[in-house]
Length: 610
Image (cartoon, rainbow, N blue to C red; front, side, top):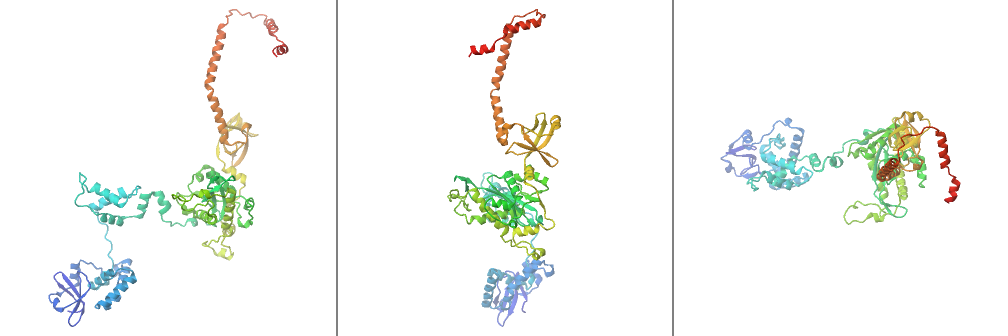
């Protein structure tokens, strides 16, 4: 008997780890329990054994060639051996071994039993390769129980009804493990088996999509791994558009509550500069028109209207970005807004629920609202708990008017553009050489001079005419007919006589004029029916409808009057005696006699009848 020998007796195999004069230190290689000291006499029935016999009886398959192990297996093998290596020199000393096991378990944040398992496994085979984790076996065919569990998960758990695991388990037992009388059979999977199979096969993407829907997954759960802005904003001139409802309640001048205003903004994706904004009570296309006008407005003059003085370089933006990036909002997909392409602007509509692709404008709203909300608490600002039951009614705190709030918003935007530090902007060597300050306005001003800057100059009249809604007008002898109204312009006589159709831009808020769109130019036509001048289209259509209603209301009376008229005429005609022989001679004399006979002095008649 020598140290590290394998000894076998039947199916029991032990390994000799140490030998002293009166005892032998051995480990049971089959049960793999901690080694113990034994009397030599107890091992007299044991005979020598080979490693092959040990592998055969224990059923352990070791990959002797460590090069055949993959990187993860080798890494874990060495990590496990590193754990137990300090214990090996003291394996026969129980007290020292126990202390080392406790210390190592604490250092590596594993259980003491885990350390013991690794130690016994290594001592049984004396081969580091036995510590390598086994590769997962290829998926085997599911058992009938596993198929039933998978069916139940798909039918009852992975649905928008969001049933619990226990409910899905109960439904599985009812459908698959009950007899015709509805009585549970003797053998069925436990809930722990059901839960284990669920955890083993769960895919988080499938979990979110099946229970919450694809749209919710796209908005709240999907991985955000795109570059976002850097993909399509290499220079100044990419404007990101969006709108939000502000977290504050406002009142009017009379002190009546109005509600929460809508803030629409355009942010340059390259510099994060706020190119323009619109603060209004109306959203949709209306707010977009206000935004477009504000983008090209002189910001110094605009701020002066609100009593705010700024320098030109603080907000030097009076041109349209060459590209607008929007979401799938109805106002951005409307024909009215897409007409802005006539000015050379490219409109990019992002997919639904992809806010990270226009993250700068989303962050802009967060920053602006954070700026004013902390200073306006108790003045109508909404807190995060405003939808909870029993919470304070923030509408009662409202005390600011739209004018007051717009002044606050302007101060916040001026700070955002010209004084907020942009810490993570990717500075180039040229920017560092030019000592460009990390402010949006400075980056914007520097970026405008670069090759690739895409800004478009346009006047306010041309911009508004471009964004007006359009319809088809028809030429006729009565003029140009648009929205059931008649218009006229000098020099279009030939079109009036020839007829035909033309594209017309109109202002729904004032029907006084319309503009015929011809080869990119706008020709103004004036309203012929003066009674409608200065009115909006809805009001005019209401008047026209009211007139039609009045006409329809007397249609029956008109028919009855025509019938009565026909009856009177026929009665008179039928009562006359027929003249079979009409004298055709001396017609002039006969007419003169009748004139004298029926002649009246109307002055006398007027006096007589007063």
